[in-house]
Image (cartoon, rainbow, N blue to C red):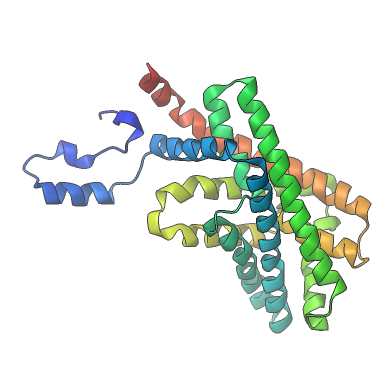
Length: 287
C-alpha cells in the first residue's frame, strides 16, 4: 500500500482503473482520514493555540469554566425530576454532556483538551521554547477554567434561583468529588483525562458528527463518575461555598489527584500513544 503524501489520507480510488472523475470524488469523500492526517490536523491546531495572545486564552478559558456549570445545573434538574433510581442513573449523565457541548462546539479553552492539542507540537519540536509555551498555556487555561467554576459554584450556593429539591440534587451529584481516596480519585482522573483527550483526537475525523462524539464520550465520563478537573470543580466549589466541604478537601481530595490523573490520562494514553503510531510515517515524510 502506498504511503499518503503530505499527511493526506489514503485514496482508494488511486487503485481503481476505469473510474470516472465524479466517482473518484465520491470515493474520496467517503474515505476516512488516516492517523497521520488526524495527527497533523490536531498539531496544526495546537500550534495556533500556542501562538494566541494570553488575554484571549484567559477569556476563552473563563468562558469554558462558566459554561461547564451547565453540566451540573442540567444534571441537577434531571436528578430532582426523576424519582426512579435506575432511570435517574442513566439519564443524569445526559445533563453532564451539555456543558461540554457548549465548550467544544463554541471553541472555548478546556484544560483537558489541552493535554493533547499542544502536546503534539511539543512532541514534534522537542525544545525548551515549545515546552515553556505549553506550560504557559496550561497555566492560563487551568487558572481561568477554575475561576469560572468557582463563580458558578458561588451563584449556585448563595442564591435561591433554584428550588430546594434541585439544590439537593446538586448536593447528591457533587458528593463523589470528595468521597474517594487520593488513589481512587487519581485513577478516576486518568479515565476522564483519557476519554476527553480521546474525544479531541476523534473530532477531526468525524466531520458532521462532532456533537455525537462529544455526547457519547462525556456521557461515559459521567456514567462512570470519573473525575474531571473542570466539571468536577463546579461541583466541589459548590460544596465548599455551601459549607458542605472544606477548602482543604477541595485542594487535597479533589483538585490535586484529579489534575494529576487528567494530565496522565490525556498525555500518556492519547498524546504519546497516538503520536507513537504515526511517528515513523512523519519522520519518513520529513526526510
